Length: 200
Image 1 (spheres, rainbow, N blue to C red):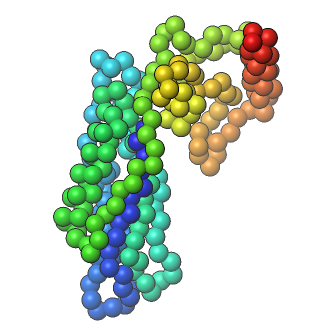
Image 2: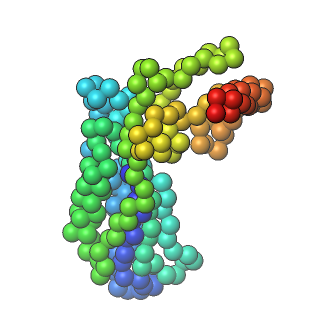
Image 3: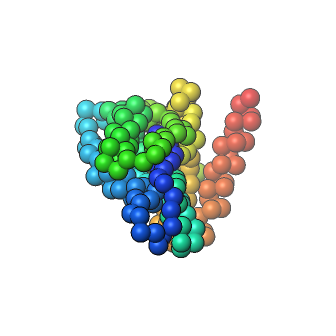
């Protein structure tokens, strides 16, 4: 992943002023359109990576009240990187959109980009896939970038993102799981930890 905050600036003003001002919110909305329209590569079969790059604007904050057009709008941008579209590529794409914004809709202060985090993409090799445990059917699945697997992969340690319960509506307001599943998952973790303690 490659994650950054983007601070979009503009001159502040009164919403009822006769002077036309392109406010920070309008400039930021234009930037979101530019980012949404940015071309990302598709899945590259040669990389053996299951997902394509993806860019998401995940946060948009600015202003309060009704009568003041604010001078700043803050965005969060999250980019899923791949072996063929790395953190440098993600940053280059975002900086290109920002440069286009600042050229099309100039402001007194240039748009700021602050990188927050970057982790390399990784995929477990076939001989590193999770094994069946306690008679449960276990299969590999693609996980998002915010997990322990990505963190440890950055240190050269192959690891899964974790073993969890079946779910629906991931990260949605209706995210849910069947209540009968957590005890099985707990038992698997307990057995794994006890096994590790005995081998030490």
